[in-house]
Image (tube, rainbow, N blue to C red):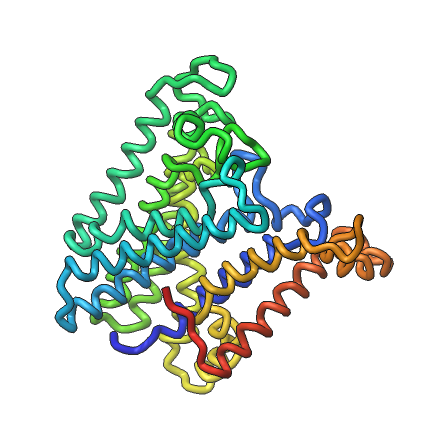
Length: 377
């Protein structure tokens, strides 16, 4: 598979656009329910965005490393290059957390990009030195091992009370480990646990391995329509399995990245991607494919610089809240005031600000696309 997969670029673009939308409301106090994370157990549309990106990273890893291995690159060279890429992603995430105040005493160490980088580093040797059956065993083994640790190991909470198998905020093994290693450097909204903590990165690696295995399916010599149907069947099956695992063991929970959550969201990722793949790769009727390609072009434009746009959006969001146009008015508040005073319902005004933010980021993406500027890590 020597050319870019348009459907994967479009799916990546869809995911990054959704991520920008939910990360940049005008007012965090006024949100539509699906555009905010579940409080703890359960899920919303927003909770599917991050695992979609991890799943896409797994597909890309299979296709990219497989292509380069076929060209004669040595596994050890590919491993070092992938480690370097993961390290750079982690570094960018830490740099964003340091912005705007470079304060070593308060900086949050975990983060979205840090998790993506860690997943890349930890998944790479499994991809390079195991075939798909071995990768499947790793996937299942990681989920089982994580469940055993979370449900069987006793740890103290932030007040020193010991718990075994508690999955409440700040009481699980992952929260204890994060406090032990990074106390004072966790998510400021909780301080005693972090949604991108170290231990919960283990099942996130399993989510990326699911993408890796999907990449093997996409790279095989079956007909595109068979691949599309396979993704659809896998998605429906994983939704059922995820619900069953959640009822039997740890429930669907994004902050814990529970095995049920990893499986369930992989199911949704397969279903969503099957739509993109079906319309852009598998449809045999040329007029329909041309129409789908035209409609997907904005998403492809987003997808070609997804990582750069996510990092840039994070920097811009921080600057909007840091830069002041007056002693008591931030730049974001100044920009948001006309929407607040327009008469719109506060929830709709908050959503409108987020939509305009996405439009502004698309303008940057479009300008880069026109100039063929593609930022690769």
